[in-house]
Amino acid sequence: MILSRCFLGSAFVLLVAKLMAAGVSSEVIVVSGEPWRRHAIDASSRGADGVKLGDFNRDGLPDIVTGWEEGGVVRVCMNPGPEKAREPWKSISVGEVKNVEEAIFADLDADGQLEVVSGTEGNTRTLYWHRLIQGEWRTEAFPAAKNTQMWMQAAALDLDGQFGPDLLLASKNKDAALGWLQAPAKADDLAAWSYHKLREAGWLMSLIPQDVDGDGDADAVFSDRKGERTGVFWLENPGAAANREHAAWKEHAIGALGKQVMFIDLGDVNGDGLADLAVAAKPVEIVLCLRQAAGGWTEHILKLDGKNLGDAKAAKIADVNGDTLPDFVFTCENAKGPLEGIVWLEQQRGSAWKQHTLGGPEGVKYDLMQSLDLDADGDLDIITCEERDQLGVVWYENPAKS
Figure 1 (cartoon, one colour):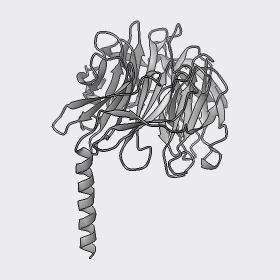
Figure 2 (tube, one colour):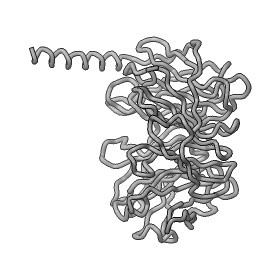
Figure 3 (cartoon, one colour):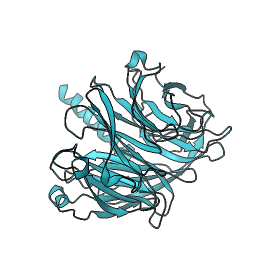
């Protein structure tokens, strides 16, 4: 009897996997629905621009760091846990910098405490390190990345196998590039950090470290929305030893070539065990790039209903309704008046995706998202930020289990 149960369980799993891998529809239909309940995490400044996660206070809960572009401040929001998640979170300012566009957590000096790295655009064009020294937050610029590029994205990871985390960086407009800032023997010797360009660019929106080729190191997956080579690509990491010699990284195309691509996300959409890619693309669509076992990607375009939405901004892969089929969450900018700025698309295997209301008509310019079960009710909630109606850093409570 035990063998029979094991066999049936394995057979069921295989059957589900085959059904999921059978095909993904490109059709989208709009269905009516009510907005999710929105909770303010932090609305203390202006122009919240991005939400990145990390356990800042080492309590086992993911906290949030955000750069406030118009307010000129970088803030950390401490996750209070599920019982108090619906209340505004305790937040602190770790630095004041103009034109801040990006902020991430990183432990560059390996002291066990996360610090913050921020990047700025506009006329500032500088990368900063915010760290706590003798009880006070200090903001210092990396000389190699000062007044050089409009910094859009950053990721901390060890690329050369020495001295701890380096910084993988993406920028936009004049002198834009994808490159990396190499850490010296002592991280606090900021003048010793050195910059190495990997690829020229137009306007890089997303930058995700991911081991695409399965060789044990992180490659760079990115979207470039403007310039001569727009679309989604990945650069192949040649390995730590080669990076110490500042070797070139080989470029590979993924999809959405020639399109104005925005924020991307990676995840297994069709259940075949491979990491697929979804990217929001102008005007109002999601380009789904399915990874093939033999190599390469197949492309599917999901055109959303543009009559009630703003312009494409970000796509997120998440099982919103808990049916084991990955869905999409989609954010917009220019969602003025009655237009919606955030919706979700329900995947139905073999039939059209259903476009559901999530945020309603409030909010004009949304950004990338994080999916977490903040209230511990068994479903994924959505964290994002809005920077025109000044909703700030917010989360939407998933009603699926209510």
